[in-house]
Image 1 (spheres, rainbow over the protein chains, first blue to last red):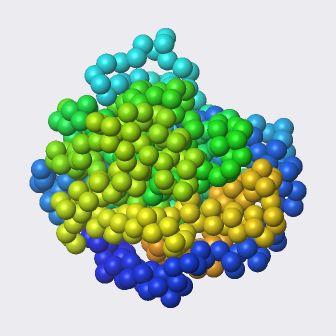
Image 2 (cartoon, rainbow over the protein chains, first blue to last red):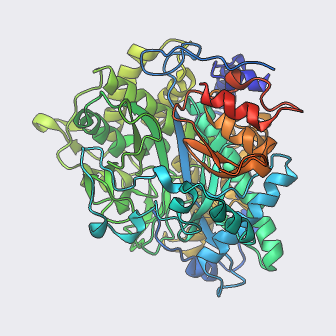
Image 3 (cartoon, each protein chain N blue to C red):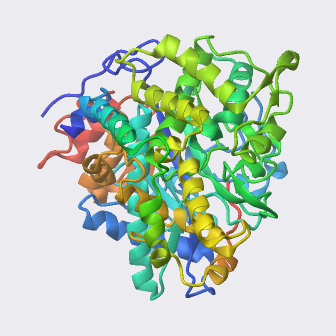
Length: 63
Length: 541
């Protein structure tokens, strides 16, 4: 159960996650930067007026 | 109903029930905040609106955030780890974090009825919350800030950090509905116009380790850590005055090697020293040069590698590297995504950032490489990050945040034939960190399986409403959820509770971060449990 895992023991799930990611990486091939799908759709996600948005993005300094 | 079970302490304070390498740690995230449709609203007003909305978000989730005011009594922002204090008159006003902007801490400390009665009246706008997951959410000057609950290893710190992003995104959405204009939060560290705001990490470190050893061991590590966990940035220089891409959000904002400040003359090693635990035994290492991470593997490596390096220093096993120009190296490395920049080290040695990281990594693998170690997963991902970056083949874009951002920017640039100063690229940089569902580009890559999400969805959702079970955050969060009407104020190391039957506030100390855990408070938050029993039990710890 998740709560027990949160007590601190590294879980089998984490190890599985590591292995799975290794396998995925191998399938994808090392030259695949993996962003092509998003590049095909990105213009639909981006704010419409880039220049205006970037200019208006003003923050106060923090820590 | 059970009793409170005291624990025995291991050598470095962690209960022996936890795996070796466990350490109390947590994160602080200052979010960028913006309402493009209502420029007249100040960032402080927006931050307060988000904080106020957070109370309802927590209630909706069933965890009852509480509008309990933060108690500043134990905050000592001018205490320096090197063993002296700054004069208040010499401090920049932003350093006086113990002067609460909602209430005077001393009023609460008076334990008379007036202070909190007045506070209850003033509950329409909230500046400060304690959440049911044990976190603090508040207005830090002009930014909303999430301070995660105490956790005992990097994996959990990553999980509660992600939970904070989700909570903040929901609160911003609700605040926008109430204000009638969309409120945007960004988990980034600069506006690209000269301002920076922080993502801090905190690690509990034994006071017996000389501070000089920490500085010597940490400086080369912090200067080079950005290559494994930087978030990437479009523009170089504080205002982005030179076009191009760089590895870190924060690198251009540091001027000192060691110091107390966090808002001006920022130092690579910060000496603010408030352990929120037994002073004689602990210091809290406050780490300020890190980037805010959207990619969970980068969070894990940032937190895990740092905890491991602290352990190497504590055990006298850290590699001995002295950089000739640490402050300059910070920007030099960040401005060199090819990773070829040579740093001048002791005796004229020339090292790349990856060489320095690998020296620390090899030491960690050698001494803490066992599968039972609390940071076993962090070591795996740290190694994988270093190897992928050395290979230079693009595979790092699946799990090293700045590489993923760089791949997206380069791909977009190539398709459109854009120059680096094109506003579209600056927009991609900003929108990378947008917390709105469906808008954030880092999240979009994870949804599409193009970047490893790593964290487990059900754990993140649980962490939005549940505190870590193995630290005192358990008692803080559960008390807020179970006895919200009783909590008058809270702090990292205490709770102030009001009981119907007693005229005075009951202040309960939680000085030991490893104590007041789920195991030690069994039954105390069950149906029918009474707050009086809890107080008695906590006082007996």
